[in-house]
Length: 191
Image 1 (cartoon, rainbow, N blue to C red):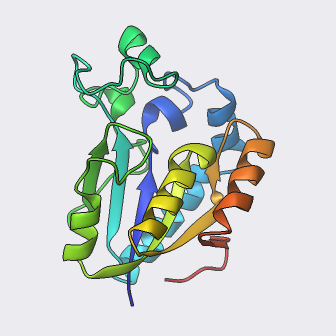
Image 2 (cartoon, rainbow, N blue to C red):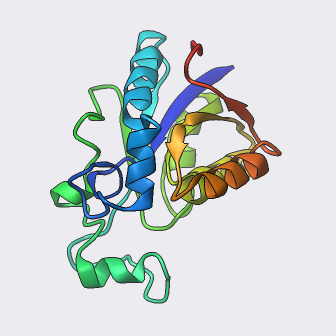
């Protein structure tokens, strides 16, 4: 069974201490839970095992034409310049850079499967099992778990390589995700 590892929304705006949300509860959880360091380790393990690594990020063009006008989470992006795919804040975290052989997906909604080429890319790679991590646990990660399941993939999520605004949201998302996916720890995991 061929696998892929998906790094979800680990962009500077959300996960870097100097990003737009660098002082937010989510970014503080990213730091305190060592999500970036764990993601770096998982990427290295995946590449060593020749498991495809996909970098998925929320991103809008400078005119924000793809941003939904009534979304409580994306509407402020247009006003404040968050998640601009062409600037530093909209790029992957400085320590999490795609390399040759990795694939990248830019999404315009919470789910990495919604109106993107992710499903097509995974099918072309012959993938049937997906491993997931990122921010936020109760946003993109939970959405990816359910959509991966509904696209007939076998999802697995690395609990300790995800973060939400607080542990209550994180734990609730993990509990719900455990219905659709296997919840794992990155610490002793090998692809």
